[in-house]
Length: 490
Image (tube, rainbow, N blue to C red; front, side):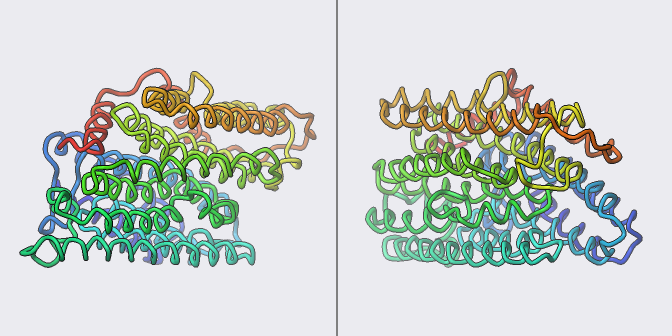
């Protein structure tokens, strides 16, 4: 069991999905590949990855505790999204959706999973950059899966903005390489771009160049992570993508870009010995939360509403990493985990809403609870969870981040954050109350899908459980990853 075997699963599955099987066979291969990946990911992370970091391909690939968290998230959300899509697209799509289009979706879905796994398992910063660009190319086809004009426009906007951002990130990597070449004589070729090698030699790197490099990395990868003011692609892409794709984009893609920022944040702190990168993370994180407020308060599209919520929560995670310390890093990582499952649940619910009501407009949806009581409970609970209400999981991670800020005496930031979060909660509650409990028309409901409903049920169990109890293996993994960010070897 190794990293290459893990990466081979989505690659092989994507190729198998291109074979012109019957629709049901393609659907089986599509879901079975995700199931195999999830099983292998859990075994690799929790059994073989308990001790020291795992390496492959001459040290260019690596899995430490920090990588392990994101591998688990990618595999878990990918499995839920594939099961949901098994009915949402393969069964509910109707006769107008051609088998060729479904095969294309299945192919790029698993290529997307592969590129995200490669991102978080890359020790070489150049390989990580290539993988993050790969996530853009693969997911652009998923945003445009239905070939509508609005989807094509959203996909192109996403592709152009994220490609410009990733170009700036490349310049940051070049600066890091220049610093390594000029200060670390005797380094061999690609080893100079290996994160572990650079971290071990961080005190020999030029602090000023590393600060400049981090600015480019933060802007470049921050565009992909949805941090304000580089987030403008995100609402369009999320609103046009199918529910399962939106779940992946918001639940794990944004987190993968944040992973890249955190890797450079660790390196910059070690090289400069200052809080330079921490301050930038707090500033851009707080800006992201603030920018999300008016768009959440006055939103007319529920998928765009959830997209702006992603901007808010990536900002919260950035603030947690900026606060630092064991509690700040732990809270930020836990927040990324909680956000992945909570936001995925909400985008799956959005798929249900579109299926039942045939509209994305908030005012066009009333009386969810009267039309489908199960969906009403799940959707309203998900909205409370994403707003940070107890007893749901997001409350725990938000509380940890705020506690870290108060312990670090960042009182102004914490009070501003509390103010913004209060406004966001009010906005979400207003929208959700209207949609869930309004007096909607008594139109007949379409046929229920047991498979789609089961995914919502699993999501509900996860966000409730994580509010009361964090499984011991996951808790230990997050603690070890917090130590990696804090500069302690895992």
